[in-house]
Image (cartoon, rainbow, N blue to C red):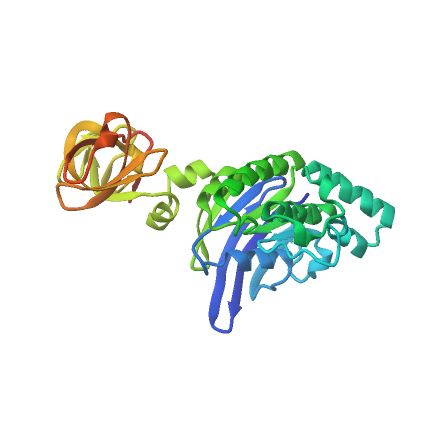
Length: 339
């Protein structure tokens, strides 16, 4: 395993910066998620670590050693792409052993290592099958086994579950998370799926327009977003203007207790849908839209000042319908004020 450090990495294509001035460290054995909107620089960052892109400026280091100009084949990096890129003219076992063959490992040892990995991933029965006969989930496992076969110092996964159905994704991300933890491998996991990153990763880096907005644990990213972009991008958030003084939060149309909040002359209160308390006495909103999501009922409600917020309902309040008044309070323990 290795740790990975990006020192002020910039990658430009002509005058366009795909990433700019990125400073990032991935600790030995850590799984770091990289999320952000399309075109924010996620894949460019991954390709730069793999060696497929050379930075315009800055350095890439593995265990403190500068590998900025080291070619991909000499970095001992395992790669798993969303397409899996399996070779149809080879069996599953041959696909898994391909990297070992390129390293000059003998046929018997290649086969043994491939079978070990297929057993680890629960697909040893597929060893002699063609990749064309496999389901998406099976192909994903084969792609992962091939990446792990070379015993990489670093594992890079670029949207590996794109195209899989939601039920299969849920199952595979749990299995993959457990496997990465068991292997204790250093990994970067690029995904557009925030829930996937929250479940699988030790920390998350949020990218926007080629720069890093925040790096932190899933809990920190969700509960203490560094700015409004992170608050809006990760999960569902409501942003309310607020003044915190003397143990109260003044929202303009109402005041609520400031439990857990530090004083600020003014700011923006980040309120998640489940931070509202239906049945509270602080203020009333009017339900405008209602959505049954199975696990909860979510409504779009209009506040007294005309703003709209998203609120998750439980208990008796799940029967609230458009046009009805909804008494609310805000649970301020643990929520966040942006200055």
